[in-house]
Image 1: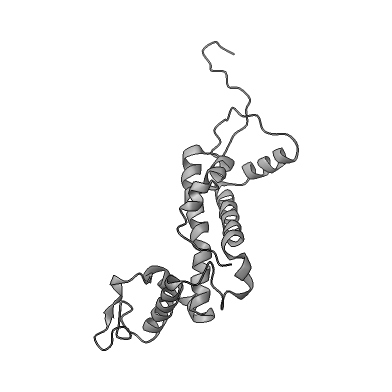
Image 2: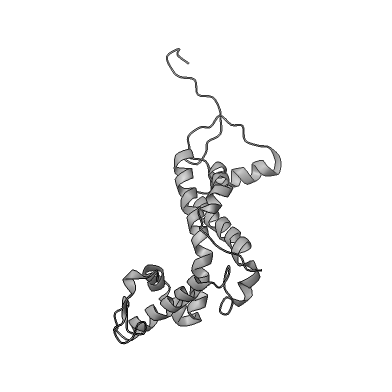
Length: 189
């Protein structure tokens, strides 16, 4: 070796193949860490999404998982009733070729512009197949479960992009501050 060549220490590589200065753990934890390293970024991202979905179900929806068509995730407050109505309205308006952003069912006979209400037209449009097949409360419940999981996953994607590490990114996303970003979900007793 010539004196001008840099000396590269023998260290493990992380998500992007860059060397890390951390020694890989030994034993069972080391085997799990190696398994994650062998998965590509898509596999690790899918695993993170699965972890956040399981956490969302455990925290928010476990008591109602068997009856999503009839019981509310969280608690059935006024907002949930509005979301159920708006999901059903979106399905009805599209099926009957009506304007989904205006209805004469509210403040009849003049009607109401639904653009001034929190009717969630984007999620309602995405959930039309679920609403059509399983009902509006089921569709709202699925989105209530998916929202915290997707928020955590998006935070994970940002953290893994910055840190280029899987476990630190998932640990950052699992902190209480990121759980608060979910919003004001109220729990039913």
